[in-house]
Amino acid sequence: GIVTAIGLDINGNGDISGNLSVGGVLTYEDVTSIDSVGIITARDGIHVGAGVSAVGVGTFSGLDISGDIDVDGHTNLDNVSVAGVSTFTGNIDANGALDVNGTSTLNFIESINL
Image (cartoon, rainbow, N blue to C red; front, top):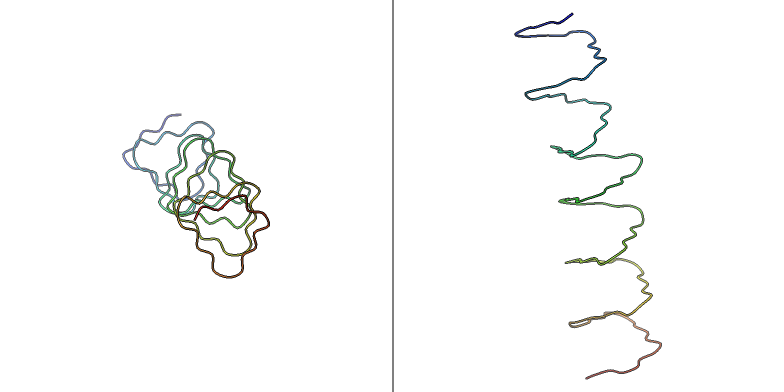
């Protein structure tokens, strides 16, 4: 039947076979499974074990990617530090000074404006 209560404490299992609507704050520190369609707001990190697929806008204060990044389209990067070997398959357009420390090899130079 229907239970109407001012306060409800469940000390065992609570099984709900239908929908659950919460009008206030739902707090649970150890949620083991969340299926979310829509907006996710998190107080702490969101950890995804099987991969991330995002459509829309993603805003991150930091992003650590240990695998490859494949970006299609135009990308603006304000400050980039590259450690290791970088390979470019197109033109490199340096609109400011280009400082090279160490050995540099240029195979073909069409023109240099000094």
